Length: 134
Image (tube, rainbow, N blue to C red):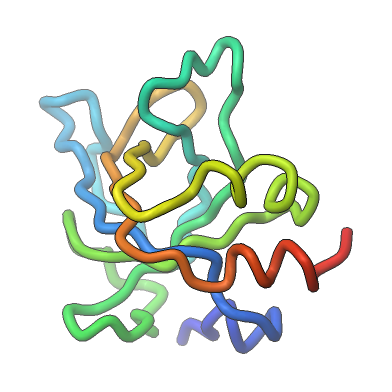
């Protein structure tokens, strides 16, 4: 059973996205990931050879917006996810300035885009940037 990140970390997720995993025919994954998937994130329009990719992990939700608790089950091919910026300094220095509703990006596996995302809600990002230390 999955233990939600908020329970583990003691603070709320940074933002939420709607997502769609690309099928293998579009260069995406052959199988869908499970809860606990550790992909990276890139912003649409960024040249990742210059900007790099970011350690921002998804925590997938069910159709009602609750965290999926079955870690072994595959996540939906599209849906919503809570996003967690892994490194506090990056939260302050980069993401608090760039994340807002409507921002588009990608789930990344190395340099490969495996899913498209759009920010639908900013949650604890700005507060977390102030409270959570390195």
